[in-house]
Image (cartoon, rainbow, N blue to C red; front, side, top):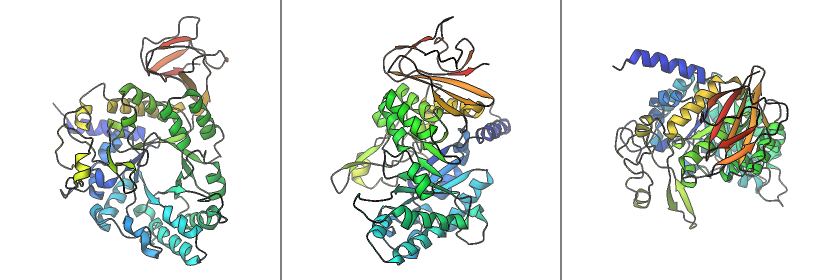
Length: 464
């Protein structure tokens, strides 16, 4: 018999444990959960699903732009102050933010800055920059009471750049970003400034040093992981983790609004699991999940005005059937979108189906985040170090902290692989405890060789 109180106690205990490590969940709010049956996901819908998000370790929700996109080309002070009406009213926004903070969670806002960067780079009128700063600082403390319980904990700026073109004379870091970030920090010194770099090959250091940001989405590592190229992953990890400035963070991800659905590219579930494990386990950073990524959602495609084919944000698949309370089918009456949607009923890709399947991608996510919560070496301070082996299709590394160390080995290929770990004297393979993976994959007595099935993820605690 289901016992609600016992379940609640278990859930609260587990989420309290998980909350020790930050995990970001990026949401396209119009597509997440519809609270009032108008077809649009909204602020209240997100609020109603916070239990679900906390159940697998989410501590921070990142909202896609909440302001009206048609206003983003305005240089008026109020350009960023108007909600998309389908998301809800200000009272409902406040209700969401207050509930997030009541639970000990955080909330980040995303801002698209492409037009403003171009306007400032091409204009000598100081009003353009000043109005942009005023409009953005509004969200740092909407009611100006110095109580940030109703304000975002972080601003996420997409497409941040120093120069939009190599020949540009204006340094946007100097002319826009440094004064803007200083203004935001003056209002709330604890506000986290996050960026998706315009330069996808950037390691983030110029953004830390020259623009004053706190956190950088590691696009270089994201690309490397999705190629499953061992050397590319090691090189990107070294640049993302080894030289990370004190007090700064990287965000690790494999999917977001701009990349399209990773499940469209990695159709093998085991391969998806391997990419997910690398994102979470590799290094000193904060993992980020795109809504629906945890159940392997695929994405519909639509031809844009410039004839490019682009993904569009489909409704989160809550149910086995394609109908149910809260389904955010805002595009149901838009024929090109509805006809090209990827979601299908009873295809194994829905929260309802995967919660009932012990071998589902969702259950793998839960196992990973539970492991991340329990092992101190896997928290965001655990030091990453490559552990060399002799196979180009197998990556191996350790994460270590003062009170713990883990060894991670991942087969990056769709074929069985044999790999021998180099004896560096750092890891004694005869003193390991399996935390995740195939119990049949073991080091032979006196040896350092492993036989790994395709896309296997093995995690051991190193015993000292």
